[in-house]
Amino acid sequence: MEHILKVALAQIAPVWLNKKATLEKIEATIKEAAKEKAELVVFGEALLPGYPFWLALTEGASWDKKVNKELHAHYVRNSIQIEAGELETVQTLAKENNIAIYLGMMERAQNRGGHSIYASLVYIDQQGTIKSAHRKLQPTYDERLTWAPGDGNGLQVHALKQFTVGGLNCWENWMPLPRTALYGQGENLHVAVWPGSEHNTKDITRFIARESRSYVISVSSLMSKTDFPEDTPHLNAILEKAPEILANGGSCIAGPDGEWIVEPVLHEEGLIYQELDFNRVYEERQNFDAVGHYSRPDVTKLTVNRERQSTVQFEG
Image (tube, rainbow, N blue to C red; front, side):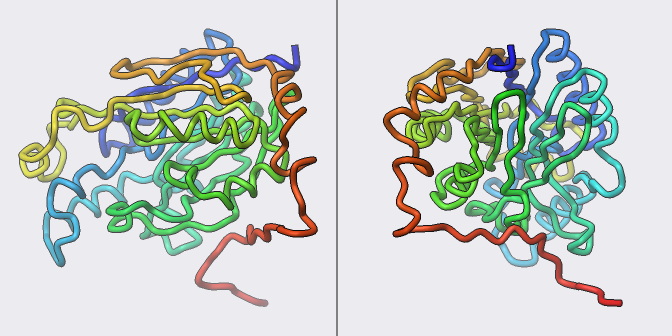
């Protein structure tokens, strides 16, 4: 059954800005997905350790404001440094359960000094190997106050049974050229991760599926006012302006014809399962293939720089 892939969409809330507790919740979710024989499990954007909701609630753009500095420092401290082995337990679960993982997380990148953070989408294969870490190319709006812009190194695709999977973070999915970079490598299962809410997923999921003639999985997190831990720095300042619901989910799946397989799921925490049949990709590519028979590389062509960017390069 190499043409059938069982996927699990992990629509869960983080233990907000708590790296250790959120990792434990992610690990429990992976185990649950594995029990149901899922072969790929996907987690939302920045789930580990959570999305920076405070920026919209504490005058995040105010210059030299102590509350924002302290929350940022807390956020960096709870971000993940891959080189230090902080994903090893997740990698072990992937290998033990023969399950691939896309995980949205905040990465404290060692090769950029270790103090700035990137919204990264990490792919771990069924052997437990980290195959790519895609740092979000352009943080969106107020995200720029706490996230750094990434590079093209993670614009990679991966073989999973008969499928070729690739992924982008949040509004990157609206960027035509990064999408094309993945299409051109043979992507036919596109993973789009979001911090939450169907206003993000309800249009773009079907659009990408119809444009690419691929399956598209959108995975969002949940977050409500009651999900903020009591030990969160400056909690009262955050809660003062926080709405009851900050992220309502909206995880969904569209087929290669652009129609819903799973419509956006709202306000429900847990795993959403679906089996995907690769043959549907071939069927829909018959009349349109954006980088194949319906492309004109002699007229328009994309050049992609996939070099991992670093400020310092040592020679000798």
